[in-house]
Image 1 (tube, each protein chain N blue to C red):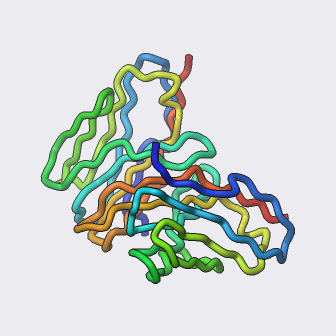
Image 2: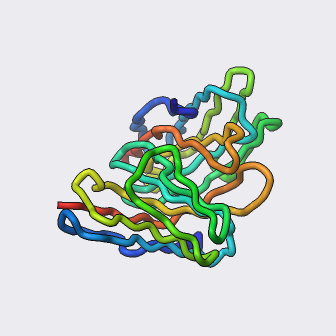
Length: 111
Length: 114
């Protein structure tokens, strides 16, 4: 069964607004990652948060992790048209160097 | 920008043809992966490798095969392509080490089998 599941499946917001995506998972993890995928391209790693961390920042990105609720959120502040993409969370679940990707959130930034 | 390359980027072929999708990386990574992804859907791991002469099947059953004769090269082969193989194939690599760290993805090969 899927380890990570993103919510919402799709999100459209106006440029300049903040976008929040959530990821829930089922089993204990060592770390959780967020990736971005532009249409028809490969994935690009955005940020990794380890199980003993609660929050992490990278530029306009802010990731939180709540291991008690088995959930993570990705916040993109001051969104831009270039942020239009699909965003995936990925968890390891102790599976020996393999990670499991969720179904993704499709983010569309409106001009 | 990750130094991982996939060729071809797009491939349209007829049923029954043998095809090889190429993947190479110049980062010296031991771990390499192949994922299959249908449009707008999640990624499914179909093959992975921990190093030279190491290959394992992933979570999604696939009729493809892989080889890892050189660290930098991880080709995927379909002996007889079928329309059900139409999909996007993504190659990735990562560092060898304890636990799971970042994977670096190639641009993908979009395969269409007629």
